[in-house]
Length: 145
Image 1 (spheres, rainbow, N blue to C red):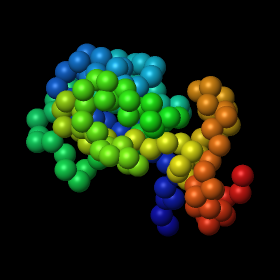
Image 2 (cartoon, rainbow, N blue to C red; image 1 turned 135 degrees about the vertical axis):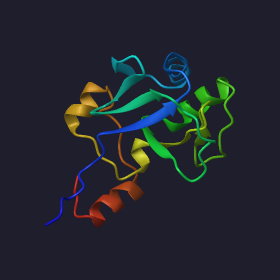
Image 3 (cartoon, helix red, strand yellow; image 1 turned 30 degrees about the horizontal axis):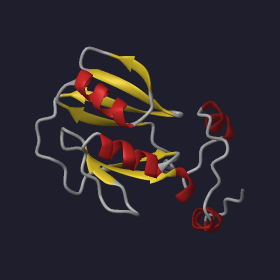
């Protein structure tokens, strides 16, 4: 018997300094601080979270990365550019944070990822309509909206 993967609870990112990381990510993304310890901070992302942990020592990530889902990818691109962060060319949106973490940003409307209506309501994101391509991916998995 095996367990079926249902989702991701959280991702932990290693950063040099937690306070600096909170300030840096706060210039680019709107978020709520879930909690804090001496060596880590926890940022809510809807019904999931990211942990920022002090202790980054390795070189910048190459293949290893994680993706964030946002309500407006182009607003994120603009905020990153305003913060002086190099970003990839459209349609993708990739960047590295100051500690070398490779981040991909995707728009909620463009991917098969779904949030429960209660979560979208709490995030004030109820009006986000899925693009036809994303709906097709969901239908191919037997998920009908």
